[in-house]
Image (cartoon, one colour):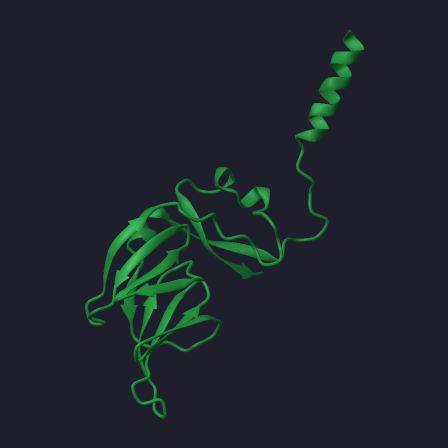
Length: 164
């Protein structure tokens, strides 16, 4: 009986140990406190396009996602002379959709609805918290154990991964 208990204990010990990576992890998470995330959506001056993602066209506007940062808004009334109207900062954003004048976007783990009927006075009309899973590092299938919520500062959310 003692041998069975000892064998079970050894097996459980090895099953609960996370493997140590053989080389340094190539990414580091960019995190935000929940309170900062909820007040992060804002219209800013036009910004340089660095990491474009999805493109959405509605009426005379082009919306270009800047991966994990937000959305470039371009007035395309005159296609030969498009005008950058501004940059809508939405940390953790990788996807957008629109209906009427409401833009729907992922704000990291939250879904936000932003009224764009007046670009000089944008307004978050709704936020549904924790709809999406946290972003995982590029090329990985899960968040490494040392960056999971239980192993980092309380009440923080990953909004982006940066290369080391």
